[in-house]
Image (cartoon, rainbow, N blue to C red; front, side):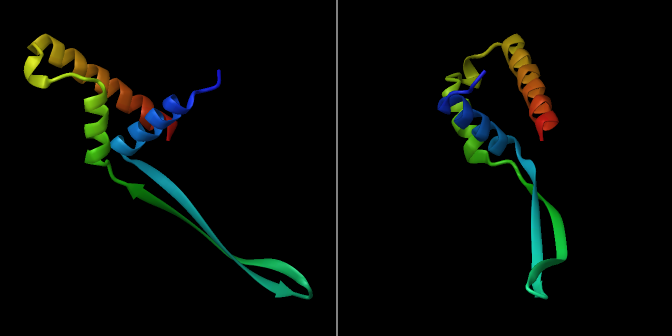
Length: 92
C-alpha cells in the first residue's frame, strides 16, 4: 500500500518527535593509476534527540486537552503513546 504525502509527513514528524539514530558514511578516494581507489571509509551513528516542537504539533493535531481527560482516558492515551514509541523504535 502506497502512503500518501500526509501519512509520510506524519511519520517523519513522529520520528522527529521521538528521536532517532542516523548513520553517516564518509568515504575518501584517491586516484591510483587512473582509477579511483577507496582509501578510507568512516561510518558514524549519530543520535538525533526528540524534538519538543514536533511533539507539540502531534499533540495539537490530535486535538485533545489533558485537562479534559479522565484518569482512565489519560492511562489509555499513555499506553497508546508507549506502543507507538516502541513501534517507531523497531523501525529505526
